[in-house]
Image (cartoon, rainbow, N blue to C red; front, side, top):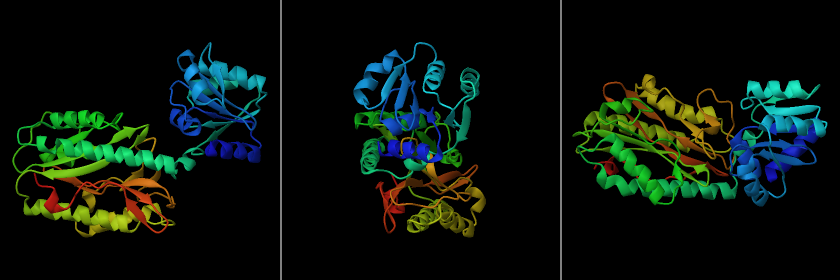
Length: 356
């Protein structure tokens, strides 16, 4: 509701008649409505949720402060009728989420309307989490960690990547998660050189490193973690590369504070990896915001122009990937505090703690 009132103030200040929210995630953020097939129209005076018969009763119960409009034809045609009745002359739209067909439908049916494309209006509010959002994310992390601990004894020579991923996703639900945040990544041995490897039938072999990237969705909020496990004795080369990645992550975490440029967080890790001779083996950003979506603002990479603010939550996940050899990535979630950050995830990651 706090975001909704700010959006209405924004419309009044800019003298815009309405804001059509077509991104389902943003509809959920603004209204707390959890159904799908819905579009939100915000005006300075009233707000309307357009949905179909399946969700009308739920919407009326969940969000009684918003007028619910049941579509009888397509959603966009129903909206066009409302725009005409409200005499909407200027309309913000989400340019990344309004389709060309929807745009054409509006301008052909609502004569003289001014369509104003926007980007990031609602997303800017989503970057800093409320106390309620933080608690949901903490729970998503806790479930992810408990699920991970539950499968460690199953990581053995001869067990396939798919089996590990399936077990982890089962334990996520068993521990109270709605589902995984994304398809679990389990990459073993040389396959870990692919940052987002598709989980395969490859079986764990002696002296393999096992990269597991997993997360949990809890009440629509997400977690995202990555850990390495190692079979038997760790080779000198693996120890070296693993420690470089771990140290790079520590440097990045230590640089997090309000007012810091996001690109400097990336630089803290990237420059260290480059200094150690592996710069070309680290090709992705060091992190990303996470909340209702697994990847959202703030962007934490070398090109980011964003400035960190208190209550932002994002991942820090440097990595080194060497084709034919394998890869190492270590990923944790951090919360920006008034004077630094808190690392929200707690799965052990020291070299002495990752051997099976």
